[in-house]
Amino acid sequence: MKLSVGPLLYLWDREAVFEFYARLCEAPVEIVYLGEVVCAKRRQLALSDWLDIGDRLAAAGKEVALSTLALSEAESELSAMRRIAENGRFVVEANDMGAVNMLSGNRPFVVGPHVNVYNNQTLQLLAEAGAQRFVLPVELGAEVLTLLQQQRPAGMETEVFGFGRLPLAFSARCFTARAHNVPKDSCDFVCADYPDGLRLHTRDHEPFLVLNGVQVQSARTHNLIGQISALEALNVDIVRVSPQQQGMREIIAAFRDVLDGRLQSPEAERELMRFAADGTCDGYWHQQPGMDWGVRA
Image (cartoon, rainbow, N blue to C red; front, side, top):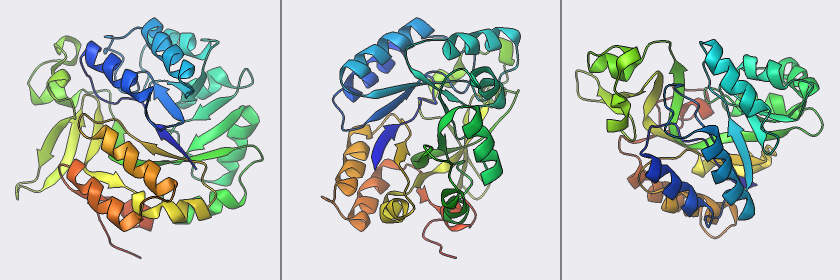
C-alpha cells in the first residue's frame, strides 16, 4: 500500500509552505497533492509556484497531483480551475463535479474526497469519464468501502483518508472571518492566525469543531493507523495523511513503519495520539458517529 500526503488545508506563511514541501522530498511517501482546496482568496502561492514545487517533488521520485477547489463560486475561480486542468504536467484531483466535467474525456484524473462517491453506479460513471483513482468520502466507512471494492471498475485505484482533522463541510460564508466580526471580502486573512484551524468547544468545554475559513473540520483527529490490515484486506491502494503544523515527520514515519511491518498498529496508535490536540476519532469507519473513538458496531 502506498502512502500519500493530501493537500494543505490551512493558510500558512509562504516560506513555511516551501519548507514543508522541501522536507517532503526526503519523506517516505509516494504521492503528494498540491494546491488550494479551501478558499480562492488564498493566493500566497500562484499556480506557477505549485508547479515549481511539483517539479522538485517529481525530481525526488514522488507522484504529484494538483488539487482543485472544493467549492467554486465565481468565473475567476472556474478560470483558475481550467488552468489547473490544463497544466500538462501533473494529474489533477477533482474536488467538485465542475472539475470532473472539465477533465472528463480529456485526461485521466483523481476523484477527491469531496465528491459524493456513495455507490458503484457513481464510481462507474466517473471511471467512464476518465477517473483513475477515487478517494473515499470521509463520512463513509468499512461497510460501504467493501461494497465499492467488490465492483470497483478495472484500473481504478482506491485511496482512504487515514490521518488528520476530517474536512466535513464547506460554505459560501467564511466562518473564521465571522468569528472576528469582519466581512469575508475584507477578511485580512485572519485564518493565517490559526495554522491548524480555529478550535471550537461546547459549553461543557468539550472539543467540538475546527473552523478553517469556509471549511468546517472535526476537532478530533481521524486516525486509521489501527486499521491498516483491514485496508489491505479490502485491497485499498493508498492511505492519505493530511498536513498539520506539528509532528508530520513522526506521523509519516509511523504510517510507513506499520505499512512496512516494522511497527504494530496498537503501538502506532498510542504514538500518534500525542499529535492529536483534541483527541482521536474513527467512528465513521465503524458506521458510528464520526467523533467516536474505539466504539465498535
